[in-house]
Length: 69
Length: 148
Image (cartoon, rainbow over all chains, first blue to last red; front, top):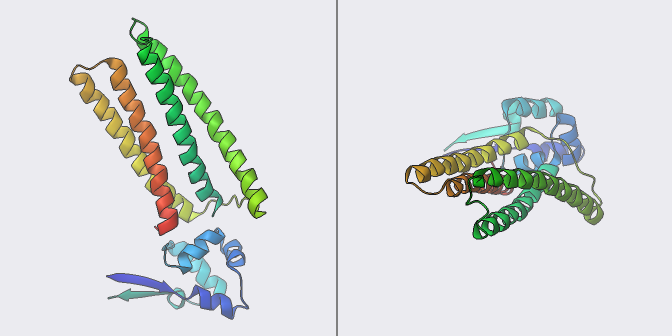
């Protein structure tokens, strides 16, 4: 079964402990959505995935890692 | 808890109150024989329209009360942003809600075909909408808690 993991928590840490609330405001979603994505309870749309990646200045595949088990 | 998730909880609460009100008035009306006369269907429709009006008011009052209580308890202002996750979850709820409404409608038609009273069939359709809406809200709450 395929699964998607993400590195948002680490990227936030690397960006000077950027809060979920700040990241949410910058990519245009609620804090709860960022929390749900970090915990793997919500798979974002491609558009939001790109917005998050661009915010951190990295590629989408550095934020979201797809495992085809 | 997001503003939208809290709204879902409020809607579940409002639905419970509204379904209770509907049942109370419709059962009481039925027991009193109010719907038995030639204008029974018209009386039923007027009562349902009044209850729909009341349910809108109850929904608004509960939503405002919930927002105020939330602000007082947590000190957090409501985050009014509705984002893509809310829209995805709303879609799930809408599907369940439609399923209930369609089931009620088809059930009502079948009941009429079987020769039951018109009022009973109408109540069945109404119940389909009401319970479909509640089911949709429960599905939304589940999606908010467990993930999409």
